[in-house]
Length: 431
Ligand code: KE4
Image (cartoon, rainbow, N blue to C red; front, side, top):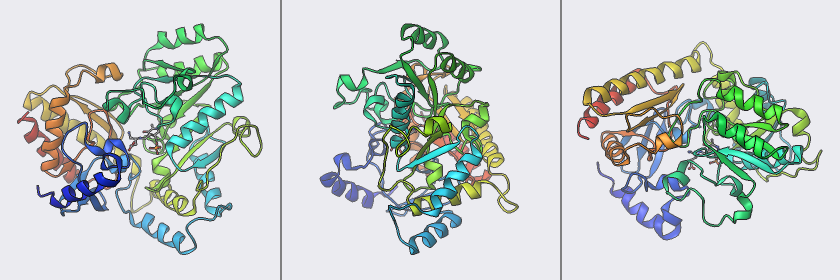
């Protein structure tokens, strides 16, 4: 595949941008080779600057749930832009977005917008500490909640791939109140609460962890986390930046029937523009400035263009006569990909554990079940690298790391999924 334009752009980028990228996972360090550059996307496809067409299973890490450049989103952004790009003054679209989120997620009675998922998670932690007047937070190894200092501890996503889970530049004091537990482990959480009586402000968890690949909560685990936080006066924070409005219209909490105290969001609610949000019970949210003592702010929070894009995304996900039920379609396409990939791996005689929840998935190159990050680490990363590049050269773009989730959009057709599976079957036989 000709990538001469990408190569020269990357050489140029390296002169001005650390590692040539504005986010580490894009650097292909986990799979080798140099990243390609994209200047056009539409539906399930992306085109690199050399004109190569790829079926995209990253979907800009989740936001493009309707596919790229959806006409409803493009027109909403164009219309909003005509009236100005930012006001720094309340605008009507912020109220529309807030109402849409509260209507879709019953546990969220009030919501505050931010400009990234990191900001949303950082703010939710601060709020939980301010509300409970406690300092300690439990997170799970392999879960990633953005690059906020206190949570960059045994984090997932790029931090995991880079092999130094604790980031440089984070003083030990900043993580001394962060307790890391293994996901899906009941006893560990019980022991942590017993050893830290009345000191735990909350648990922050990706209800379906998607930053060490993808694995699912064991039956009853999320209910257990809800019960144990309640019984200890701590808060349960669902980080739904990735799962929100994707795993169901009301996110993972709707899919699994859990009511967290706080939730964080991002990605889908921005329709591809920079957005995050955190919300929950009104008595907790009202601790936020200007009402309460917990300070939180953002110049571009509730930006009108980002709101317009997110509102269009959420609105279209509501489905209509033309588009049908988006979630049923995402489920159908996800099941088709899962069945095809499992068959392809079996017929190639390559051990693959393929985990999926709705339209999020991960194929681990291991024969063992994967229920947490320790299991995920058994994956054969050399095999993954070869598979990744084999698929890329055949026109299919997967997440450039074994420790990332893949995403399907409503724009991915059954024919494209079938084509993907056929290519995978061929590449798997070369491993
Ligand atoms: P952002 O600050 O990147 O908008 O969101 C941070 C975040 C928080 N919580 C969860 C569950 C997330 O998945 C993320 C970000 N996801 C990664 C993908 N693994 C973003 C990709 C990147 O870092 O470039």
